[in-house]
Amino acid sequence: MKKFFMIAAMAALTLASCNNEAQKVDSAAAPSANNGEMKIAYVEIDTIMNQYKFCVEMKAELEKSGANIEKSLASKQQSLEQAAAKFQQDIQANKYTQQQAQAVQNNLQKQGADLQESQQRLSQSFAEDQAKFEKAFADSLQNFISRYNKDKGYAMILPKQGLNILYADKACDITDEVVKGLNKEYKPAAKK
Image (cartoon, rainbow, N blue to C red; front, side, top):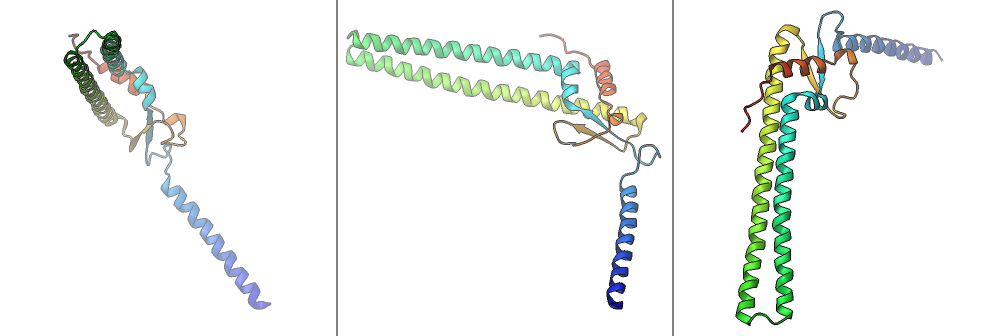
């Protein structure tokens, strides 16, 4: 029985000492912004993308470009389908010799291949434009945050988008300040 009490006492001391160490580690690992040890902030990326004039203009430009590409490709696709339907009608009406029919069919196949090539080229060009926009946005944001933080002195400024940060105190949100600063510095490019 004496042995049991000794083991129980040692276990209690171990648990108590672990709890004290855990509290010390927790408070050391997460210094509060109030005591001046470390300041952390975050920005809502979606909000910036919806309110930063550069992003708004670029998204509108990309949407317009995408719509023009779709319209152009749809028009070419419709023309090709109409030509193929007319060809089928003319074949059934025996309007072509075998050689003429083969030539028209080869021409239609070439137009189909050209359409696919055009679609791939335009899709690649659109993807490159999107990548340029994303890079320009990232560069603009990082450059601004770097200048902005010289005065603010944050140890870390995190991007919040979706669930990449599960919880953040709203007091750490500097999104509005960043959007105002970005828009203040933004100078639209001259229209082409």
